[in-house]
Amino acid sequence: MSNPLDPSRILQTATAFWASKVLLTATEFDLFTALDAAAMTGGELEGELGLHPRASRDFLDALVALGFLERDGDGPDSRYRNTPETNAFLNQNSPTYIGGLPKMLNARLFGFWNNLGEALRSGEPQNELQQGGQSIFDQLYADDNALTVFLEGMSGIQGGNFAALADVFDFARYRTVTDVGGALALLSRLVAVRHPHLRLQSFDLAPVAPHASKAIQAAGLSDRIQAVAGDFFSDPIPPADVVTMGNILHDWDLETKMLLIRKAYAALPEGGAFIAIENIIDDERRENAFGLLMSLNMLIETGGGFDYTGADFKRWCSEVGFKRFEVIPLTGPTSAAIAYK
Image 1 (tube, rainbow, N blue to C red):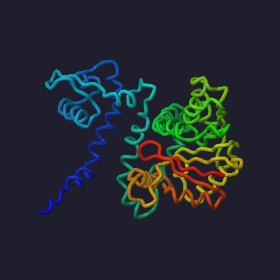
Image 2: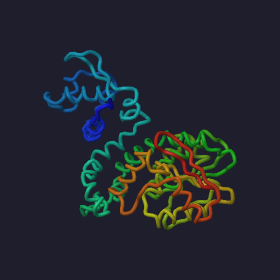
Image 3: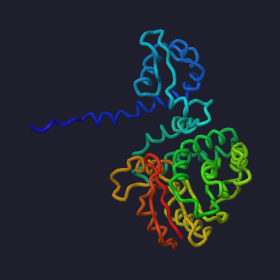
Image 4: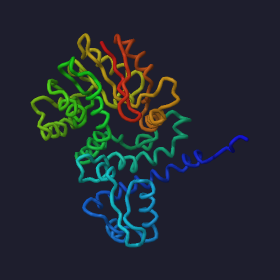
């Protein structure tokens, strides 16, 4: 007798936004920062966060059940504390804090994704631009504090991938690296520590450069990493043996992708390498669900951006003149797509 059909996976995915919103709201309330110093009871957290007594127990215990909080005891006097992961990544006092990203997801993207159907019908973005406002980048560049939080969040979320790249890619053959759209120079810093022979440049817009320089100086790497201000549309990419782009190509339409690939090619010597760190979709488009969902996010956020497969990357780079290609898995759904000149 065949097993009966089970709707549980459908129901789990259909209600997944419940769990997402609980975690995002906890980050919005800085719950994990409140629990930095010591465990707290539900009553103490009600006072600290301004929670209503009706709501607090279910909210906090849902975070326990989801694995984002730990709880000592079972009664009203039980105490809540961070897990190692939430303490490391969602506590503002942690050097590995990445809460800027979930805060942005909560404040912006959660609502915009409600219009996915309209985006699929129209092909148009559903963010601030659709509503007659400024783009998120225009807003960030106008507010230095907001830009700092955003850069820290974006850097933190890619840290594992950049560290993995430093370990798995053979940088020994090269002497110089330019990271395009380098933000706080995290890729440059991680690669520099792992490969002391390299000299690196972190290339990003002028408002970002002071933030990158500060991070480089704090890491004690100012003698080997330079923050270079420029616009990768209007300025040439600073020449280097290796050119990297972390989550850059997927922001743009195909014409702009090809422009950036050509610029990377021009910046490289013979034998140089162009590395795109992205959620590369598997060639059959069956497995990397996160990469496909990220591509839908580009539909929501941009006028023409989309994610792509390794085969797409190879085809585009071949048209420009690159001769050899590989895709190296990094962490989770992310890979390094590499083209050699």
